Image (tube, rainbow, N blue to C red; front, top):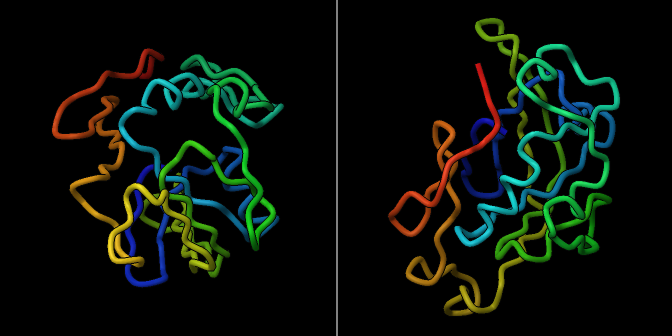
Length: 166
């Protein structure tokens, strides 16, 4: 995912074309948006060079991607059954959002990416970061941010990606 933003129960995702994620979204029309905390950056990095596509596109091969079906195992993370959608949630992520796909658009100005509009069905949050039953306490949770091949969280740089990119 290259980018995202949310407004109410609508979350918009920027997803590169040619990967397994966009194939899954086109086919199943369901997803789980897992929001990791900064302590999971190394787990995320463990799968940064894997693709879910058996037929690895040449451009991905050139930058070091290989096929890996079992990303949970590779990342040392645990699948958790979702309540209303087929894809599983990541147990270790403090926020997990079950959603359905409402629309997928490919912009003419950049046909390498899709704009995926989703609608939230269920929102799961670790009880340690919830305040007043329905709100996320921003002093107890910080999202993991990936920005220009660097991981950030809690106001500091945590590490950078090790895969080579052109």
